[in-house]
Length: 129
Image 1 (cartoon, one colour):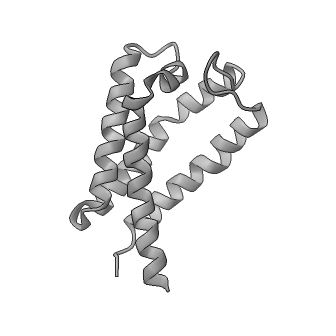
Image 2 (cartoon, one colour):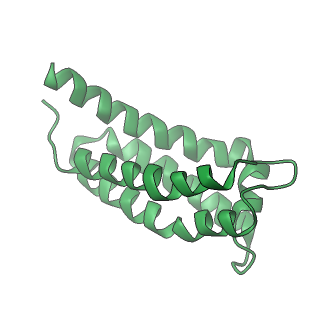
């Protein structure tokens, strides 16, 4: 049973980041308003984050690179924290885009984001059996 769960957690992590990365290209208008105004080149940043997420998601599936991908995901999640804080600062709502209640935006930052970090850390410290 543990091997089954491990396998699905590996697959889930990889698939999650592959889809998240692809979505930066499929739906860039969702992400662009979430990039803080003080950062330059929003289009380029969106493409870079999308490429990094895609690459890390793929690398999760390559046993030789799973640990590296996991640490890369953790680093990416840390780098993206200012974007989540910015979203809260602008009222947790983007015109014609993502609008959630402020408390949920805080939950996303304080609980969901760390859970994603723990998930990546857990995968990076296990070997698939």
